[in-house]
Image (tube, helix red, strand yellow):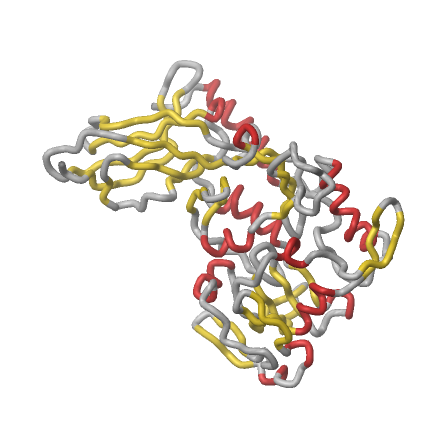
Length: 396
């Protein structure tokens, strides 16, 4: 049924609000503890007192957000996005003076695997991110999705080896010019992955930090495990465009960050952290839905479904009061099951994940059906189908 004029105007307003929210480029710190963590390493960079590159980024690019997280009070945790990562407070009642009171997300792992973490052991599936891990945003390789074949397969290098293996879309290549480069030599094994000197020196180096309103030198600069997490791939060379110029770049995926080494860069910027926070935010709040009002992500179109069925997916933020209905019906129109649920979104007009459990009495024979996400107008109850996919309903 067609939307009423009122609901159409509401949809337009919400779409404009969502565009404004997703396009924001700078914001104030949403929590003093986020600013405290940022100040320690990135205020010296901002003030020209550091000889290393950004750890978080020049400033947050979102305001404070409350994302679904089942282990946090009220089922949501406080987060804020930066170029290089996302800061999180999972337990606001914890001790803010401990190192892990503010954490940063396992964003690289989630973009590679195609999952949005919404609890310690709870995830909503999504397509892996088709966003380039290094260089210009227009680069088409390597995407995070391309790293699935490298994830958690174990290292192919050992202590003392030099990284000369390159990554190309259809396999691997060779960068022999780095066979004797000290920066490419494996000097540390961690979680069965080799880490080259360029990255290990960066992770364990000292530097100027800002603590208690003073610039001081500290060794190490940061707790590398806290910042990056463990490596989840070997390092590889790629050719990517950086500011429009093709460069050789060595990269390595860690749970929380991407590290890059660009020999052509000035010394301070040869090792950098990728813009993982930007990438994840774009993926989660735009790319997963790809312009669709909603999407079911854990049940593939054309698959056979059986009762009970947990349905998970994402909605683009337009549902009135975040309420949607998940429904299973036959192609003949008989509704077998439906369940209202709440989209767990950070704020009005921002996309968010959902889940609903459906149960029904199985038909006598396998039956063609549709699995749908629908909303009802607050004005007159009119139904709008946000998403629909064909399924086969298994027989009893």
